[in-house]
Length: 124
Length: 124
Image (cartoon, rainbow over all chains, first blue to last red; front, side, top):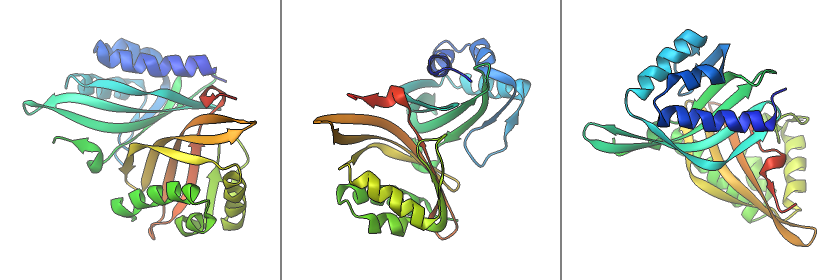
């Protein structure tokens, strides 16, 4: 099973990936057969290639993540609250999000789900 | 499907239930066939009777919930970050938690999952 330290480090690396607009960090966090559902209810990005394409697009918006510590960690899950801050249409926008990561035994994320909807979008 | 307003109101009622130590508020939030897994990885409380017994016990510790707004709402889910504050062993303890609620079409919670582990327990 993934260790608590591995899971917390993966969340911090996820924030760093956006800070640096470096999708190679995302590549290192996720398992090859991972799924990403962002937000919940939208089509799932299935497998590493689809996931990297999704995050490359997200990073092109200039989005940065402001993590609201602490990361919650239990069993093979991490859950974390944060705000996405991005410039869109000439002004700063903020989206409040909670993500959950499920990890495999190698410490890689196999399932990511993002909880945010219209009421969590500020300034749009 | 549950409305956004219903889902946010259910989360606020959940906090109020602890504030008032009133399990009848919990009774009103959850569906008869709901499940509660708190924290993830522990045995699931299955059905209303088991759920009310679980929350009655939790309230007997004097636990109160400090919600970290905003509640994240999408599709048939709400996710929310909070701290549980309780007195235990003569001093105040704090547990940082993220819960997810899944709702049925009548606006009742059918699945609750709580994300918190040893690293989220402060002062124990």
